[in-house]
Image (cartoon, rainbow, N blue to C red):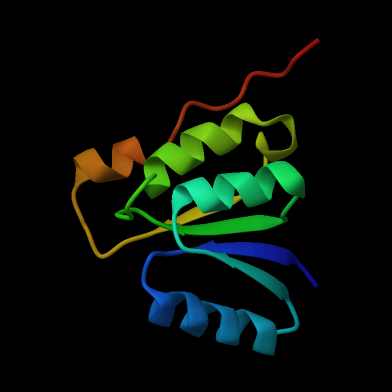
Length: 102
């Protein structure tokens, strides 16, 4: 069982994702925007983060950048879900690989 954070400003999408993941035996925490998700991430760890791109307050790309700054999320899988397409958007969703600290 994985502990998953699902982030989307659309309640119906969050509920659909949570329903499917809970049905597969996972624990799911929901957040309505990146700011709320970041606050939750600072309180506890997650095995996986699923985030939308376009959200108010803090979008999914900003959330990804902020999560990568947290030691506990440097290597946590983050899936960015969006209906948008295009190479520029794809590149923005892939932050630089974290550097190993000595």
